Image (cartoon, rainbow, N blue to C red; front, top):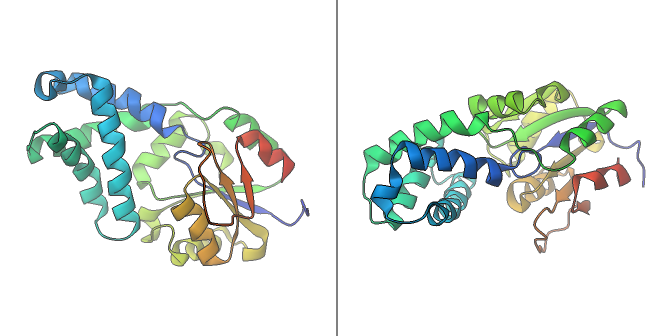
Length: 234
């Protein structure tokens, strides 16, 4: 293992460093109360939350594949969730989307050992970047509120690059923006399609952050199950 091979580390944000599910649960709980959804869905919050996660994953997958726009993604995940509770209210779905994106980025929960590993990598003189399919304003709010913005030289979003992981073009945009070379760069992320297949598409090495013990037929360069394990690679 050549620890000196890499110089530029490209991190995914959501589900890799920033604990999306925990933060989303807090934000959705506030949304549930704000819009008095208990009176509408006639169901416990946990049912609403798991239904949202299900549709959020489906809609993000459609966005990754270019079937829907950013704006459609934002409100259609709410619309699909409401429809499961027999509520066909597009206006409400759009209001919920706006409020959710106000609340969500204020949440601060990171995965265990996030700041410690970022400190370690910066001290090792690696240059860190974020490469995320999230929205520009939202992602900046997340990293600012969770106090990790200082670690990253570049924050490259699908919105600013006009590309979406796993497209080769987004990785090429990121490498050019960072002033990096492909052979000294590595992608670190949890999403097998967006991060790992995306890196493979671009000819970039990858580290699969397998927080959930997922199985895959893909072959990342490395697989880890806890962020602390990056110290064994970098």
